[in-house]
Image (cartoon, rainbow over all chains, first blue to last red; front, side, top):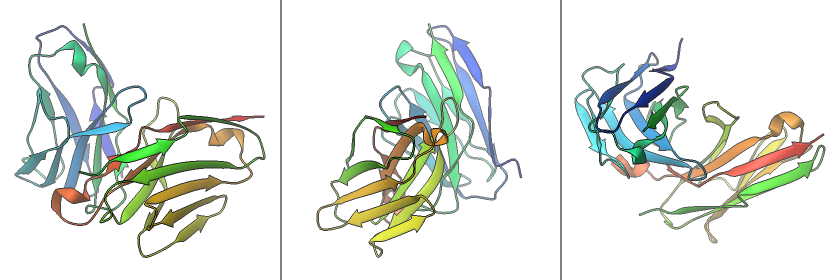
Length: 112
Length: 114
């Protein structure tokens, strides 16, 4: 099992550009999550999904969009990148809420 | 909504000493409390968790205690080793839809000096 995978590992964007962060899991988990991690601020939930075709906003959804067409994949879309979106992004999955979340290796994004 | 406070933000101990990290939560309905360890440049990984029907849980040198009345839970690491150096995050959640989503504390950077 590869677990949770993310691409790319690093990316530099110019202000106003768009990109998609890819996330995939091979554990057949219904629940998937996107977090951002800023220095000294812990992990903040951006969006989550409880299954294919079902997504919902977390704490900090502004400036992001998601889709979930399959159980395996949960891409995160950044539209009109801003410097405030400079962060490390983690995707995670779990069997159910209030169960262990398995994290991907992260994507370090810089917007300049 | 739920709010999780974590203290201290940094902790430095000598190898072999014990380390204690404390978290408080605001929602009395929260019933799941995991701890994640994140080494520098790596992903967070679960090290131990506890549910509200249990007061204490141990796994070798790691233990977690829960005080539901006071709404706080703590991570205890005994006989610390240099490889315990990392950032530790506590979190809380409760059953039911989006309420099962984890709310994380801001993290504690633990340094174990050889």
